[in-house]
Image 1 (tube, rainbow, N blue to C red):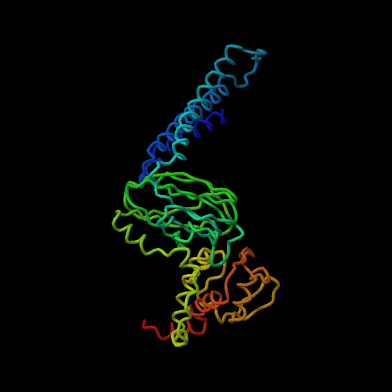
Image 2 (image 1 turned 90 degrees about the vertical axis):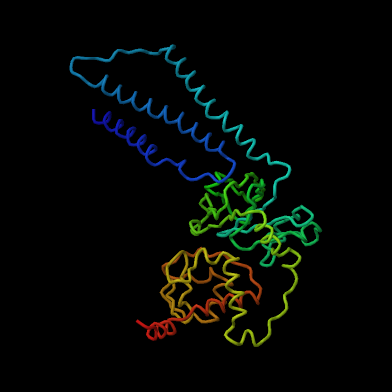
Length: 386
C-alpha cells in the first residue's frame, strides 16, 4: 500500500511540475516552432505512458496485495494482452519518431540563400568566421592551427584570404535572414546551443556539424555549451546579437580578414609601452578574451577554476607539494608556458598549454600585472574615501 501511494504521489508531482513550470515559456526567437511542436508531442506521448504505467502498477499493488487465505492464480501467457502491448508500443514509437525525423531533415537542409556562419569551439571559448566577398570559406586543416591562426585556415588557399574572423565570444546576425551554422571543434566534444532559437548541435572533433535557423526577434541571446567539456564548461558562454540589416552591415564591414590577421603588426612606439604599458596591457586584455583565459580566471577577486588575476602579481602562492613561490614576472611567464610544471594548491591542474608568441606572452603578463598586487591594493583601499 505504501508503494502504491508513493507511485501516485510521484505521478501527481511530475504532472504538476510540468503544468506550473513549463519549459515552453522560454520565448521563441527563431523559425523553429516545429521544434517546439515536436518536443510537445514527445512530452505528451511519454507523459501518457508514464502516467498510465505507474497508475496501473499502483492499482495492481492494491488489487493483488497479500491477503490471508488468498492465493494467486498462475496464468502462463495471455496472447491478447501481448498483442495489445505490442500494438500500443509500436504506435507510440512511430508517433515519437516520425515528427522528429521530418523536423530533423528540414533542420539540416538549409535554404540556398542562407548566410554562412562557422562556429569554432575550443576549451572554453567560442570563435566565429564568415566568408568574405567571394562567398566561400577557406579550407582548414588541423596542421595549420596555431596561436596566430586558431581556425587552422590554409594560408595557401585563396578563398580563405578574405574570410572574416571574430576572435571574441560575440557574433552579430541580421534579422529575418536564414543562417547556416557550421561547427568545428579544436579539442573535445562541445555543443553550440542558443535556447531562444531552439537551435543546437553537437560539435565533434574531426567533423563539421550543421544546422540552420532564421532569427525572428531582435535582441542579445546567450549561447551555451550543452556538452560537458571539462571543468571550465559552465563558463563557456557566448552571445548572438540579432539586429536590423543596416546595423549588421556596419558591424560586418569592420571585421578583420584572415589576410590582415596574418600581416605582422608594426611595433608600438617605445614611449607608448613605457608610459604605463597601456598599449601592451590592452593587447593582453584582448588576448585574455580571445584565448579563453577569462573562462577560468576572474579579474574581480572571485574564485573560479583557476586563481583570480586580481592582486595575483606579487602574491606568494602555495603549491600542492607544500612549497611556495612568489608570483613575479618570471613566475607568470614560466607558468603560462608550461602550466603542468606546477600545481597551485586548491586548484585542479587542468590548464591547457596555450601557444603564444613572445610578444603575446609579454602582453598577457603585462595585463595580469596591471590588475595590481596585494600591497598596491591595500594602499589603494586605505586611500579610498569612506
